[in-house]
Amino acid sequence: MRIGIVGAGIGGLVAAAGLQADGHDVSIYERRPDAGAAGAGLTLFGNAIAALEVIGLGELVREVSSTALGRLRSGQRQPSGRWLVSLQPAESPSVRSLHRNDLHRVLVQRLEPETLHLAQTARTSADGLPVLSIDGHEERFDLVIAADGIHSVARARWGLDRGLRYAGYTAWRGVTTSTGHLSDEAGETWGRGARFGIVPLPDDRVYWFATRTTPPSCSWS
Ligand SMILES: Cc1cc2nc3c(=O)[nH]c(=O)nc-3n(C[C@H](O)[C@H](O)[C@H](O)COP(=O)(O)OP(=O)(O)OC[C@H]3O[C@@H](n4cnc5c(N)ncnc54)[C@H](O)[C@@H]3O)c2cc1C
Image (tube, rainbow, N blue to C red):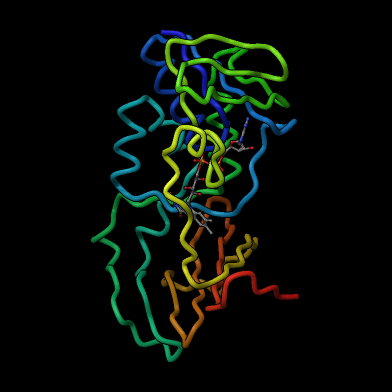
């Protein structure tokens, strides 16, 4: 089949890799001019790893991810340090963590040449036909996949948009380069209206995130 994919985020790239492994002719259209990704860390649990194995990406993801999280005690604790719930290392052996940019990079590298078309905004057809309008010209496919992210225009055009729900908090994320403070524990600390989490990444990097309960559209400086 000839398949067009809108969006080269993790969703579009994984779909493309799986479909190409199955012998399909795939083209991905990404509106950004570069193939890089924004973001910090990702944790992949056993079900995600199993799905990646099925489409032939398991080895690639293992190469750029760490099993350190599965070797630490992790879970949720109070600011005092008391654990509310925790997993002992042996209970989550398959969990892996990685930098989002690394995942994105290896997914792009896995694509067959000429698959990824950068700086090309694709518009889906309102009547649901497998046609994409790409910067002024039309391309016909047997199947079109909309992987255009959280604010998907395609989903809205196809009447599949269920809207967004504000989760009640805002988040900050980052990656540092030292593991000195990690000891043998990771996971989240839950305070009143706030959370802080740490996840080990490959190469002695640490992914951290913090959340704060805020009304929608609250800006922090
Ligand atoms: C704070 C935070 C932490 C998270 N942590 C985890 C985690 O630990 N583990 C996990 O599995 N998930 C995690 N997630 C969720 C995960 O990151 C997202 O679900 C995932 O990245 C969504 O990927 P996507 O490919 O669907 O969309 P996106 O990554 O948003 O990609 C969509 C792409 O489509 C492109 N695009 C949009 N419109 C067009 C168009 N018309 N033409 C061409 N290109 C277009 C955009 O430029 C973009 O590159 C987290 C999310 C957040 C916000």
